[in-house]
Length: 214
Image (cartoon, rainbow, N blue to C red; front, side):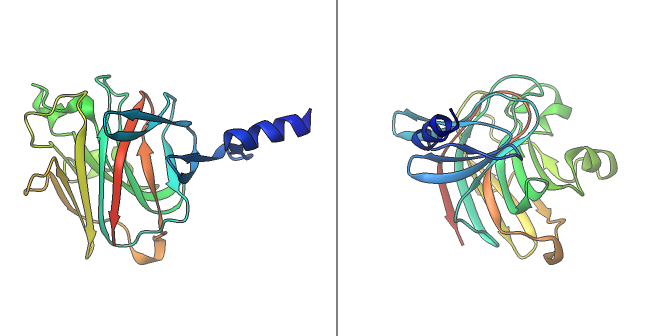
């Protein structure tokens, strides 16, 4: 039976370890996925990586990719599910517990509630500066509205994240004005080099067209 299970895992390209990680290859790229499952889809001209629904955050580290400074671009699509749709990119990762990330809350895109609208894009530095810590101690300093009134909660949107000289800047749908422009909370002593797609707890999330410029 053990040999059969190993053979099936090899065919599927998925290998699980005791830490809840799995190795997966999608669209020719290999990932190490933590606390989620990712599957391949295609839609019009997009080759999509879909995170299945699940509780708690998850990340798909891109195998053999490293990142220190530069620009990260990707398309993302969340869901209109309050407090259950968080999509973004993790970088400077040491492991799943230590990384920086910029992520979006599509359920807060262009809502009438100004407080929610102001919490549409977020920068965090886990585990030291979670969204909760930043919201409590440095309210609204590390999150902002997206500033694009034409994007709905279920639309694909394009994100460009610039990480240079200790600053994090996030642009949406080609806007010349950053939606978010903050000083990084990391320092070199805590910096890793992993990079990968990131999701918070909740709904299905889609990614496509990743481009990394160093």
